[in-house]
Length: 81
Image 1 (cartoon, rainbow, N blue to C red):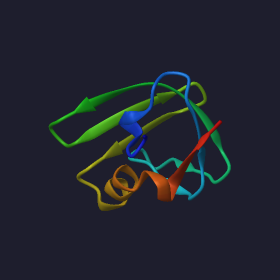
Image 2: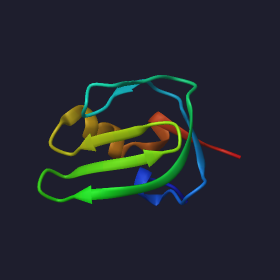
Image 3: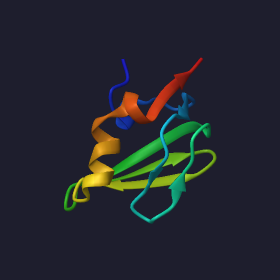
């Protein structure tokens, strides 16, 4: 069961169902389908770098809006079969 972006495995696809702004101020728009590759975690600021085939998304726990995305997977994403 996927409850966090870090639970994804390579090749899994997700669809964005709620728009958000990542750490780099990039808008991640609704209906975008992303294919997961891998992620890195940086404990200093609770930072994650998620690599998708289509885009790189960086999120940091030190920002409330980013933390909301990280902690509410099903509010922002759905798995694509």
